[in-house]
Image (cartoon, rainbow, N blue to C red; front, side, top):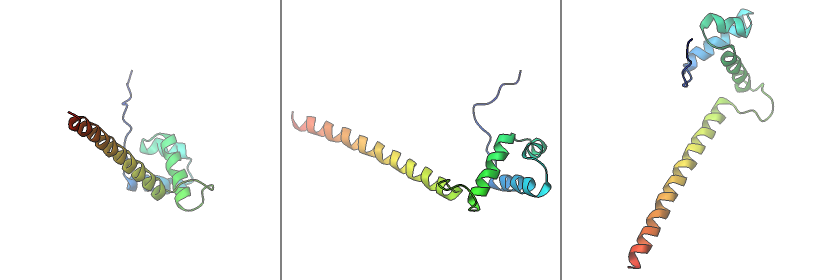
Length: 101
């Protein structure tokens, strides 16, 4: 039995673009292309869907790759700021207790 890794593979943007182009130009199904390049059909299907959104042909409300990256950046920034606030809050409590002595 082969065990799967908990970490997903990372493919380059170029590899993903080439896979999407192959699906669009070859007349082959997503499953056929995925099998040929050794990637899951679901992965290739997601790449094709995201490419469609990036081209402005997605459903309203779907985020482009650039928007998704910006959202990730903002969430990371918010998390870092929340951690900084917590450190400062703890330091303030410490110094207030120290000054009460």
